[in-house]
Length: 615
Image: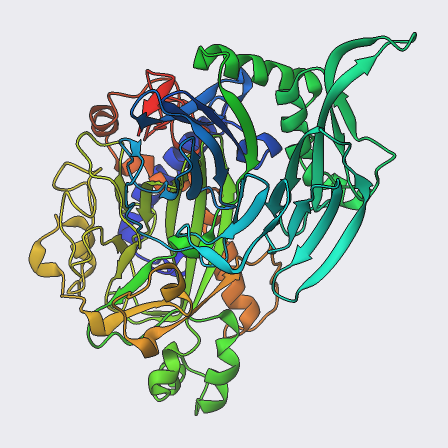
């Protein structure tokens, strides 16, 4: 990527000024009326089960309308019902117990046309830490993400729920609630005890939540005379049994409130940085809209708070032969500088080159996640100590790879890969484009030789293919591709040619150190599975820090325009409006990142003409 701080091509100054004005205009357009980010309701997924179908639902865009997007999974035969459905923490898998007693785990990242007893589902990812509880005839079993019993086997009990950290809350037949830790065998009995025959539901939280487990207890309420009246659902923290958190006439509202309450904060300092929780009136409207949109009073609903799995979508990086630079952590300069015999950029490059394989031993991917209605946008950022490509080599280089993930199953909907500077279009693959194939996991990304611009490699062949790896850009001059052979500045103004790309073979692949956990048998050299995920750096004020410092490297990441305004990944001034309209002609009413539909790419979910989407 060309160094933003060192643009000195005087002949393009008027053009740059014009682009800057257009950028400002587009940013103002994007900022108008879009959904806010990271609201508590965005990560709620409702699961409905009834005769012949399972429904998944999440908040649609625009969020202010309080409507739901719905994914329908048919059961076969149509008179069959699901006795239970349990979502994984990531929302990418679900355990389904059918009414005939059969149990299977679904990979929701894939298209599912129907569920039939006896099916042998195919998986494209593993979640080895995921445990599903399964209750039947007074017996509780713990199953793994393939639907097989864990080593802990089965025990007697009424129900169970599993926390993200692996602890299990058991409801025993005598009414006791016991928290077990399968990893250590430790057990803890909680003070709350269930009444005999109680109508209850167990709920579990995530790491970092203010509460770990909650109960929903539904029972008849009494008026002032002691007479039984309408049933109510109470939210109870089983660790504080005498202080119900809330009481609701509508059990769906109670379930929604309970999921929100898991992450509610009690510290005033923490509260200042948190989004305001939704009111009961908003939850009432959501529950009413869910019932109205699904047209069925017979569905049984449960609610989950899902969480993006950043490791699942991190790309396998593919480098060309003789690549001189690899992504590292910003502190790598502490090892480079002692090897340099001077203070020039060339001295530092020579020192870095002398490190051999150690250059990639600290491969690092910085990650940040943004939550929007319907999707997460997961940002993967890469820091390189050097850009060594012509025509403008420089110290410090950052690239990025954004993945937009559907919350109804974790399917990848859009992939955005960064290219050079502000006036070169990014390489984008979108499932919004007509006849676009579904995205398969794992994701692969090619990196340009020396300069590190990126492109999705959707078919994993190590080459850039127009229409396959970038299917959004149509005009010959409207896409960058991958230009490993670029040696002149004017190449940035020329149409892409296949001859510009070099093959990126298996020997140049790099992946997360634990990538095989998610994708057993991943075809990456074992000594190249070294990359680590780190949180994207927070804002850093770097005034007098040295050029070759970790602070300067961090500033190069956080100061990137797409880090400050992630929606800028679309670069709307290089994508003709007519192209986006033509590619997204089936969409109405919204678009990616929660914008209105006349911006560059239309949002696949809330913008659908139908409320209910077939898988």
